[in-house]
Length: 139
Image (cartoon, rainbow, N blue to C red; front, side):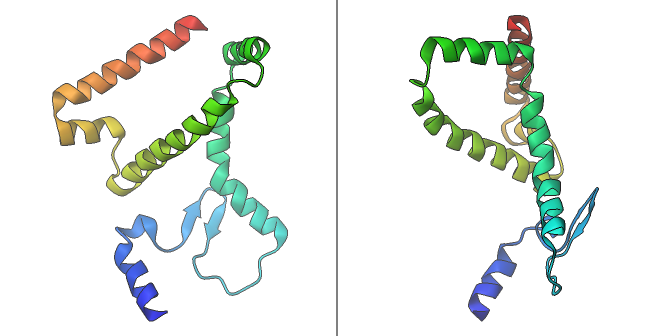
C-alpha cells in the first residue's frame, strides 16, 4: 500500500492536480472524514459536470435541431454505429486539451505555436475560423 501511495504522489505534476477542488459553489475536500449527505454529494457532482453540460446544450441551436431531425427522418437508427466510433475520439481529444490547459495555463493555439511553430499555429487558427464560418453559414 505504501508503494502505491508513493507512486501516486510522484505522478502529480503540479498543484492543479492535488489537494482540494475550489469552485464557485464551494470546496470539495480531498480528505474528508465526515459523512456527506446525498444532497451535498449531488451538488458536488453538479458543480463538477455542470459546465460541461452547459457547453453541450449550448451547441444544440435551432439549426442543429433541424439537422438532427432531418437526419433522423432520412436515416433512422442506421448511423448510430458511427457514434460508437466517434465518441471515444471526442472524449480523448477534449480530455487532452483540458489537461494541457490546466497544466500549462495557456490555450491550445499558443501551445501549438510554441511546440510546432508559427506556421502550424496560424494553420490551426485559420482552419478553425473557416470551419466555424462554414458552420454558421449552413445554419
